[in-house]
Length: 366
Image (cartoon, rainbow, N blue to C red; front, side):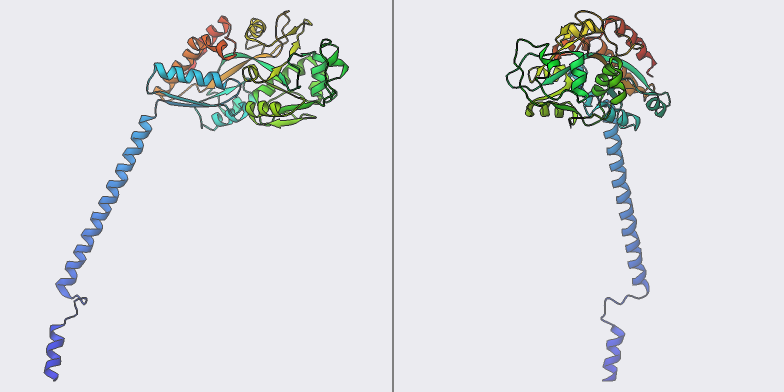
C-alpha cells in the first residue's frame, strides 16, 4: 500500500504544478507573448499617429473664421465661390458677433475674424502686433419696426434719440407724427430690441448717435456692448430680427440685408435734413468720402444715408507658409471679384481708393 502511494507521488499527475525546465519554458512563452503585445501596441499607435498626421496634412487648406454677423451672408458666399475656383479648399465663417469673433481669433481658435469696428488698443496688445486689418465691405444699418398696417415711416434724428433714450414710449408721439402727416400712427407702446452680446452693429449704431448727441454719449455711450435704459435683447442679428417680427410695436437696429424682404424699415433723417431710405445707392453715397482714419462720420450729402459703415477682416501677419499664401489669395479675391457681388446681397462695394490701399496692406501677410 505504501509502495503504491510512493509510485503515485513519483509520477505526479498534477499538470498545474510546473518544475524545472517546464517552468522555464512557460516563462519564455509568456515573455515572448508580452513582447509581441508591446510590438502590436506600438505598431497600432504608430498607425494612429500616422493617420492623425495625414488628416492634419489633408486639412492644411482649411481656413476658419468667426465674428460679425452683419457680413456673414457675404463672407459665406465668397467662401463658396472661392471654393469653386479652388477645389480642395474649405473656408468656414461663423457669424457669432464681433466680440466673440475677436476672442476666438485672439485665443488662436480661428485663422481670421470679422468685426464691424476696428480693434481697440487693448485687443491689439493681446495680439502683440501680429495682426493686420482690412476693410471688407460697406453696409447700412436699418431701423426695422413692427407697426401693423404701417409700411412707410420717417424718423428724425430727434425722434430716434428720444426712442432709444426711453423718452418716447408710444408710436403716436408728436415728434414722430409730425414727420408722418399722411398716416395715422397708433397709440401703441414702443418696445426697443437690441443685441444681447458684444456686437459690431451695436458699436456702429452707438458710435454714430454718440457723435451727434452729448446726452446719448453720456447716458448710453458707444461700444460693442452698452447698457440700454429700456428694451429687450436678442442674440445675434437673427435673434433681433425674430423678436421684431413677433413683437407688435417693436423697433430695432439690424443690417439692411437682413431687413429686406422680412421687415419694414424707416427712412432716416440725415445731417442735411433729408429723409433717406437705406439702400446700396444711398449707402455708397455716404461711403464715397470714407477713410480708415475718419471712421464713422456724419455724412453731409443730401442723398447720404446716415447709418452707414464699413466692416473689417483681421488676420495674422505671420502664418505657416501654405496657410499664409491661401489667406492672402482669399482676401485678394474678396477685394476684387468679391466686391462685384456685394450689392446683390445688400452690401456696398468699397470705394476704389479703399480697395487699392487694402490690396497693398495684404503684402504684410507672410
